[in-house]
View 1 (cartoon, chains in turn brown, green):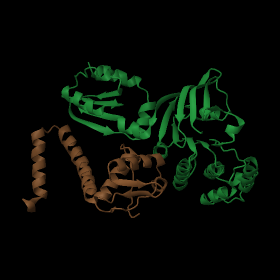
View 2 (cartoon, helix red, strand yellow):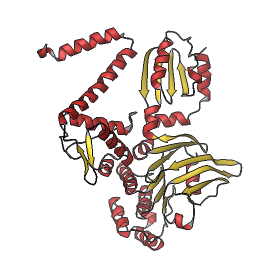
View 3 (cartoon, each protein chain N blue to C red):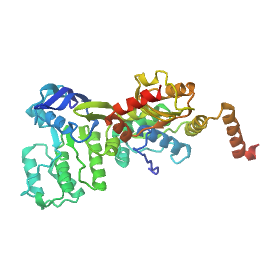
View 4 (cartoon, each protein chain N blue to C red):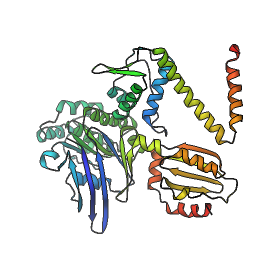
Length: 132
Length: 303
């Protein structure tokens, strides 16, 4: 398994959510390829020194989200059919979380919805300049 | 089979109430962390679980059965104070365990001792405090027990061996054993435990799944335009465990529904409203710190 997941148990974000987020990010970035096997629940729990049921919970949610599939007795794999959608969906999840947190921050320091939309539009224009 | 259920446990020593109305459930194969300040009642709870102390009230069941010789044979215990015989070598302790317990795995004990770099030829009196703890842990794990009760199983260990003990706990759980352990180091409990209870003055002040506690309990912070503001009943909402008010800044500890309180603070005119995540240490400290002082500040802040 080439993917090295790391979790920060001392963060306020539940550990299983950290595992989900990192697996999705790895799929989105292509670090985890279609059909690639994930470590077993026990192995990942020992690698990260976290509770095995926490890993199992993360795997169950990843399965429900269509990112991985589990073959009984064989282990968990990155879903092979529709990798493109999976990885696009995973990328969208990662991006959504980042944008959500930026908007929340902007709102909390007192910007209006219009102010935030303007900032977002400017940022999109700047990063997609070649396509404009 | 090895689900642990403690019902309304009460243990007093003379006038001193060590444990009061303590109830916890530990599902089979899970890891449960018991947190609490010194003298909170953790060790007394463990002693009651092992029949080493007799509670005045309440019951303890393992897989629906009360403690018996048969049940006790399936429980491995690491006490807070190690009980090694000073004049005996580590190897002699291993031999003693082998004779006492029919499922004792001698090869596993030797392997674990080697992992902790403990020389079995050493007499217990020549082991450091940490090495004594590690020896007790190795002997307990080698029992291949259904239930492990570990009282401060990382005390005195260096960070590498602490991590090793946590991995042994995780491995035991993955094997199907039920583990309940206490630790002063909240960060360790945060890693290894699925469920926790915080005990203070013999009572449980907080209990739940670590992930749920983190997902639900948030600080909602806002800044009001002036020092005189109204919280419009927020302080008395059952989901607000605590309110800290300092000048124009108010901090709410929400046990649920943080998003709703963000909206309510904003509706009351607060700006810069944000949600702050809490780690288990924060949650623990909030659970055991006195609230009386806070109540006064609230009354003042919300006038």
